Amino acid sequence: MTTNLITQWLFAVAVAVALTAWTSMTTSCVADQLLAGTAKADITNYDAGPVNDPLYAKALVLKTDSTIAVLITVDAVSIGEIGHISNQYLGNVRAALKADLNIPPESILINASHCHGVVSPNVEQQTILAVKDAMQNLVPVRAGAGTGSENRIMENRRLRMSDGSEADVRHAYSLPRDEDVVGIGPIDPQIGLLRIDRLDGRPLAAVYNFACHPIQGVASRGNTADFPAFASRVIEENLGDGVMAFFVQGCAGDINPVLYKDVHQPRDSEPFGNMLGLSAMRGLRAIETEETSELKVVNKSLEIPRGKDFEQRIAAITEEQAKLLQSLRGTSLNFKTFVPLFVQYKVSGDYPSYYSHRYMLEQSIGRDDLVKMDAENQANMDAYLANIQTMEQLTRLQTNLNLLKMHHAQNIAAGKSTLDAEVVGLRVGKFVLVTFPGELTVQIGLNVKKNSPHPMTFVAGYTNGYIYYTATAEQRKNTGYAQEDCDVLVAPEWQSQFESYVTELLSSL
Image (cartoon, rainbow, N blue to C red; front, side, top):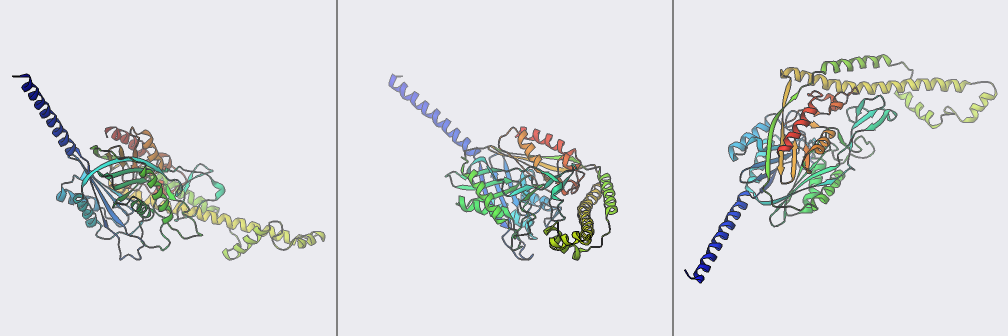
């Protein structure tokens, strides 16, 4: 073979090898390409009264050659147990999607925003329709994770009291006296973000995880998805290109919107949603998406210990109620006479019953009629105020006692010492999400994030079922009896078991 022929042969071989490698690489990229599709369905109950803004079931389907994950967000208070979504909803949706689309049930995550809107009776069918439409809309995508921050719209509703107990901020009862409150609990201002773009750079989906009860409502009192609806609108209008925003509720068990008890202006969640949406936008715009085929779902059932101390807590509240009842004292005042007296004596503490010169005249002639009357009135007002404060405390105790009795009965009826709860880990590139069906209080989410090996780890409650509040062990033992530690099924030791399990789960993602 001549040198020229050898050279040509070697060149041909090199070209063939290069083409083979390129073809192999291209095939591999196509096979591992992350795909995503979005869709939504209206789930508003238009027969339940005036509607301020629609409620939606939104579906985000994520798919690679080997894995599929479906994230569904629902504008509802919970997935079963309370509210307007039945306990059969989760199983029925999963069964239908398995039968029609061959989606494994364990790959489906359904998160309730925990808004108190009223959904339609056909929410199940609408949810299934949204997922089917999203499957039809699959396109190749790039993904990126990031964070935003918002600390203006929420507050921790747990109040630390001077006696070491904790109270909470609810409309169900009065707040304790300001002078008895010595501190408040933490908040989590972090917004967890997942941005998904089409290959040409146009945004397709934005997932944002944030912790706050959506219970502010709107001034019209109409049916509403609350602040997540307004935040999503801000994101979708600003990013454009048909992007869909998905609000994923975080560890909001003890997080209220600020000004929750304000009585001087209409309650309106739209400003809160606008602020959250703009804060999320700042984070979303900073995210650089990248090609990734990293999609993983880990779904495990965790046995949570049921509480065994309900009888003791019920007895303790009952005993406290008896003491408070014994503390009530008679007074000649009623509301009609108390209010004007209270105002009168607050306006002028030294001379409440008349102008000062009258008091001086009585003193000069050796009389003290007004002074004695003032002392009697003040004693009656003090007794009346003490009775009011006792009544408020009795109301708080009775409301939470009823919750304890309800869940004590549920635990007895269950006939087992544990309850099953799904813990799901979802990874999309650098974005990592852990979900749980309970109303996690915020400190638990902060603990999980701190101990995670992944920098972009976020936590969601209210997902794949509903098992009521799941407070920290410390909150759970509270002697002040707040909602988060009475509206529960679980024992205090549940927290350490859950956090330990989640640490292992995160290591596997």
